[in-house]
Length: 299
Image (cartoon, rainbow, N blue to C red; front, side):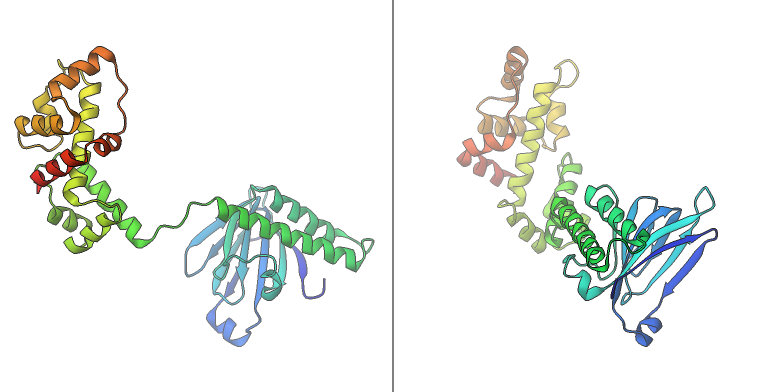
């Protein structure tokens, strides 16, 4: 098909292909190869990772990126792929996503299955379709592949920045160590491998400070614990120590300041009325002055 070729590769033995940097220097032709696995497996290694494509999977490799490929036979002793070689500048007209180091997809989307069917029909044609129609079918198949890749990327969760990942680490560390009354910015920063200054920066991304965050989480956890536990199983003092307060009296004062009732009163009301606990953040929003005052006591 002009600059595009369609090949059906079958083998009763394992095959190996290598595209090294030396190969690239000697032959700088920029080609992309689309692989549809029909039987057996394809194991592809490059500078990023190692992936194994099985029956029904789809891969793109590129001649300008080094890779090593092993074509493995399956349980029936055969290996089979349909692969399409396309000049990269042509493929980029259909696939605008980055595939410089390869691309791997499971054949779950209908577009990929339709693309494989069209390409297989063009391969099997004995001249009845005509070159213009065959080229139209190939272009349609490439367009379907581009649509499938674009749809998959649109459904993927947005990539996190480094600061967002670090903030998740910080929040997870605080949650795990919430019961420690000695929890501090120095402890969290050291545990997460960052500086206290960078920790403050990360918490500003949440529009909060360290003391406010710890205060919020401790009271929220205590509130949920009080409403879901039986007084005969766990006392208010145990809950206070369990969420990191240094004394039950301190816990009782802070709890009443934010929620308008001391822990014993709140537990009694919860048991009597079987109330549904609203998210702690909503309660904090109702008590900005008390929240600020309580936070300062933890500093």
